[in-house]
Length: 142
Image 1 (cartoon, rainbow, N blue to C red):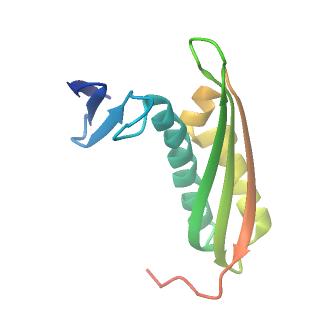
Image 2: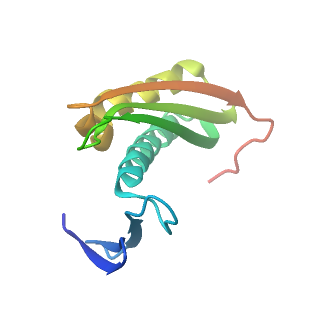
């Protein structure tokens, strides 16, 4: 895997993935135009886990219509201000969802599949929780 990050101006940088996608980073503490690198790390943990949770639930034939992960993090007070704690709370909405299947999906992501949060858990206390919401709408057939 390869990527590059190029300085634009001030504290704004453009990251380019090996697959050709671009993302803007901003190191300004105020008046920023994009997420900071640490915000990106936090969101990457949420995105990685969300991909796992949705995929696992779909493979279990669960009728998921929405999945949102709310992330909270604490950082060290001194430099380097690394993450010390990260919590991921999944809000999964679906039609006749099994709470047991959602719990299993979150646990599998946390313990086995999400390379970002598993990598971070080597030095950060990473915790997970979830809630299940019922949907009156059935997902459309694929």
